[in-house]
Length: 348
Image (cartoon, rainbow, N blue to C red):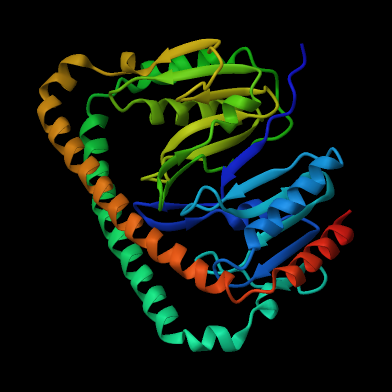
């Protein structure tokens, strides 16, 4: 039985151990038309993108939704590949200005629909809230940076236990069954986020796959195995979608091979895997045993730092939502909805 096309959901950026990392450029750089929405928090930017996505799906177009890394309920971008059209939030922290004004990029300024007098009357509160929110995010990123450095030390120690040749042979055996691809490439699609409401993840690769590999294991070999699978796929000329690790974007959490419809994931969601790959077999158990206490201690330290970062992001959330209330209370949403209707008319 043919499955219905699932929603394609990703995050547009990451609050990582290396700071705020945006993937907007790679996702939206080669499209024919890009609409860039400008405006403050609570001005309806996410709702506008959601309305565009719904209009596209009503017309049977496939839509990719890109959610905010700080708030998984809020959209940061929408891509309609068949039309080569995108709509994005162009405000901080992923500020985007037109690169090819008019020819490709067009600004949609929802700020024109707010009551400036109302906002100026609350200028002191707005400044204090924005500054406090920025401070909370700064503390969160400091904690994540410390967690990232601790994680890198864990990885260095674990690398001494890795049976690399065995791992690479396993990846090569899997790739033998693949046909030659149409051209090797690598694109990034983020599936995880440490948001202001806590951790969030999407199972998008698993939902799109016909062949599902569950990559299991607790000894730190999964990312190296996925790196080897990615190299084997590209050697056969396959494009690869890579989902980075949340804390360390240079590492890989999941892979998807569109031409093979094959996904290598940590979680299968509601499906059963076609094959389970236990990456613990790529670890020298004797060497790992000698380092077990050190790794366990460092892992607890890393996880505690991530929890601290989550606490600061929670503080940022309260400030963010109070800021949204101020701006939404000053908006003429009827005028903004008219802009949305005009945008949908232009696109379709």
